[in-house]
Length: 185
Image 1 (cartoon, rainbow, N blue to C red):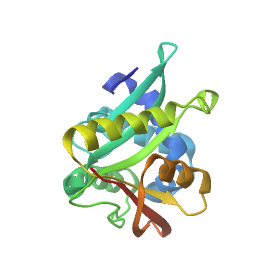
Image 2 (cartoon, rainbow, N blue to C red):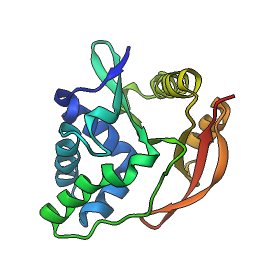
Image 3 (cartoon, helix red, strand yellow):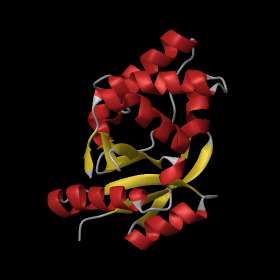
Image 4 (cartoon, rainbow, N blue to C red):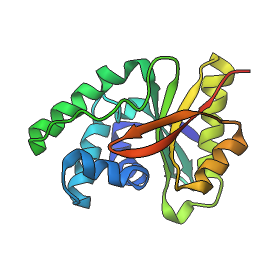
């Protein structure tokens, strides 16, 4: 079952999303501390109006528990959704927060996708992607975009197999990433 996330899912979802963006989170907060990074992400997930909010999250349930999660939002809203994140980074970590834009107008951006380790390999991630492709691209005629690490050939292979096409390259917190899109027919 796939459903919209709720604030009470924040702790579990933070752990799942952390798997997909661990290094990026450490860059954001300026330290390599798992507990602090998870707390930061959990707090953002509980709040409204930011790119990591539960409002922008879908979860997959299996056996009565959250097994996977995906964050997706309108790329045209990135600047507004990023402002609360930047504010929290400044307040908690006394750091400037101004990463490169990973998305923009013209696509809904799949920010992060993850599945809890013990449930990986069961098609949950693929089911979440298929759901997004149906919900946004087929029903609403919206282009979906995502970034994939060039070193992660398994993920790229999956995205290409599902019909995503290479749309270029982007840099995010110093990492060179491939930009892929899934467009309406």
